[in-house]
Length: 165
Image (cartoon, rainbow, N blue to C red; front, top):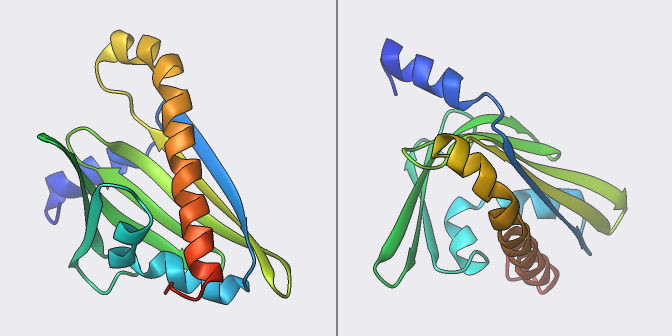
């Protein structure tokens, strides 16, 4: 990812894919606190089931490399991301550039009032498997949306309880 080939690969992965999924939650906390909790990458393991997240390179902000490994039994999914934008306390942009998960994603915070913040998690994945992947997406999409939504609900509870960040 650091040489010229890596830069081209990141640019290609940054293009929105055909698999689009969005989840939203309202958190009873100010945007600054919610945003800080989203930037606590390793703490994502507390609210995304079966997943361990670590900062591989950098400080978790723009330019950092993040790795999320989801394991369910023997099945393992490795998600490699680059943080491409941090606009505090509003938006975090990432590009997934791994073998299977590829495409841009964004986490947005919108303060609704002094103590409430809307979080939107939006992903545009490149679908593997060509035409078969595109045909399978309508079947897979509801599970993806449900998973993201449930994770965000857990995130909201942890922030509201003061357990995140």
